[in-house]
Length: 229
Image 1 (cartoon, helix red, strand yellow):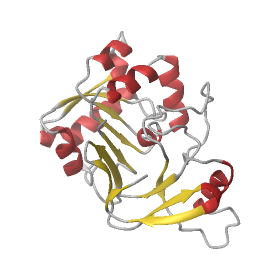
Image 2 (cartoon, helix red, strand yellow):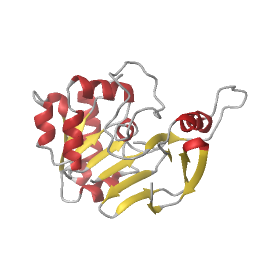
Image 3 (cartoon, helix red, strand yellow):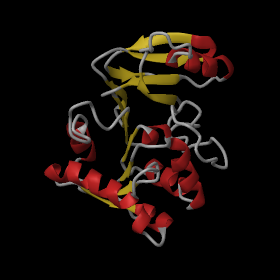
């Protein structure tokens, strides 16, 4: 399989998808056309989302066509050269994948070798479940089961920053709660970091150590390069 899983799309003060543009370009290789899954968008239209992604990728000659235009989404995925899944609300993304019955089509296509790029919710979608998303459950999918393309969970936008005087739990505390009752490790992916999976293995693309939380709250830090997850 070939997956490029990004924590986020945009760094403060930068254009949309600017920071991972080189990663995306190299990862796709000669592929210049991809199917885009826009269903994590909630507060803006799928047309606008498609336009925004195309504007970001045009300088590399990459074009996406959003699947919301298709009369046969499963067939569109079957014929795709690559699949891009945008960020937004993970619960809405999974709900729409279920409504359109395309989860298995995406899973099969990626397992057959089609490159998959996701950011934020699009990265969460590749995990066994969506239980480690940061998003509010604004809609109820049939289950928390995701595409199950990777053997670990992801927490995108990971930060250990807390608000002074605020009594809520930190992100690390919340993820430790998950790990107290689940066996699947959680990759805590900070901003401007990514995971690339291909025939050469699983590689962290990160300028800083990335925490992995294992069963029972055991935390390890892994560095940029090939890792065993």
